[in-house]
Image (cartoon, rainbow over all chains, first blue to last red; front, side, top):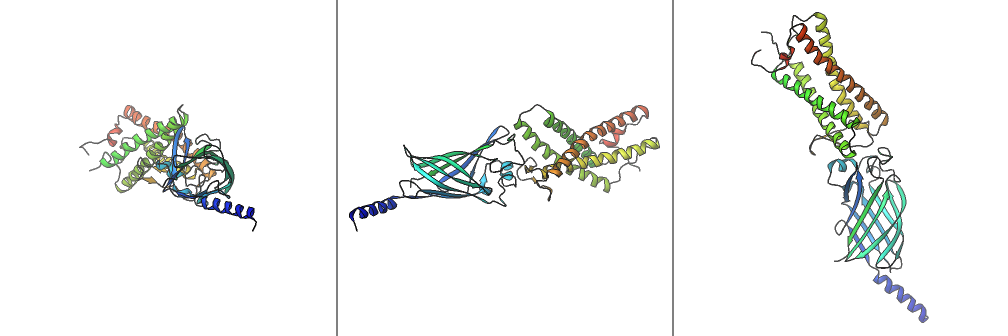
Length: 176
Length: 185
C-alpha cells in the first residue's frame, strides 16, 4: 500500500471515529412550536420524538428525526383536542412527521447550515435552518407554512384565525 | 283540587331556560355582529356553546317534567281561540328551544375546525354528532337553520311576553302567577 493511500485511509478512519452520533429525544431536548390563534400566542411541545444527529466534520453528516403528532401538547385543552383533528394534524391518517437532512455544512462560530425535507401530513417540503452549538446545547428554529402542508386549510385558508407560519423550535442538550 | 300553577320544579326550569335563552341570544348576536377582537370572539363562541349545552339539557328535563306532571289547565275565562293559540304558541316555543341548540350542535360537529365543546370545565366535554365531521354542506345548512330559527325565536318570545301582558290588560288574567312560586295551589 502506498503511503499516501494509507494516510488517507487513516484520516477517514479517524474522522469516522471522531464523528459523534447524538441521540436526541424528549429526555434530553425539547421540540416545540409557537403560533398565534385569534391574536393570542400559543406554544406547544411534542412529548414523543427522537432524532439522530451526525454533524460535521463527519464524512457523512446527517440529521433524521421523527415525531408523533398526537403527542403535541399546548396546555390548553381546546387546542389539544383540536390539533389531532382531520383538518389539522390528521393523526389518524398521518401519525408521525419526519425530517431528513440533505446537506449539513459547518459554518463559522459552531453553526451548521442544515437543508432537508420535513414530511408532515403526507407532504414533504424543503426546509432550511441554522443549528447552533453553544454551551452544551444544540438549538435551531425555523418557520413552516402550515397552509403549504394543508394544515387547517379547510377551516382557516386565509389565516384569519390561526397564523400561517408556525415557528418550530428545537433544543438538544449535548452535555452528559 | 285543580292546580292553578305549574309545580315548583317546572317553574324553576322555565325561568332557568328563560335566563339561559336571553344569555344565548345576547351573546349570539354580539359575537356575530359586535366589533370585538378575535380573541374575545373566540372566547364568546366557546362560552355560547357551553351555555347552549346547558340550556338544551334543561329544556329536555323540562319536557320530561311536563310529560310526567300534568300542567295546569288554561283559565276557563280565556276565549277558545286564545286557548288554541296559546297551545300552539307553547308547542312552537318548545320546538324552537330544542331545534336551535340542536342546529348549533350540528354546526359545531360538522365544522372542519373540529373544536371541542367543553362545558366550562375540561372534564365535561360535550361530544360531537357522529358522521357529520368536516361536512361543509351540513355545517352551512345548520348555520342558516340556527340563525333563522334564532330570529324566529326572538319573535316568539316577544309574542309570549306580549300575550301575558295582553291577557292581563284585557281579560284581567295574571298568567304570570301560573309560572311563579307560591304556597297557594
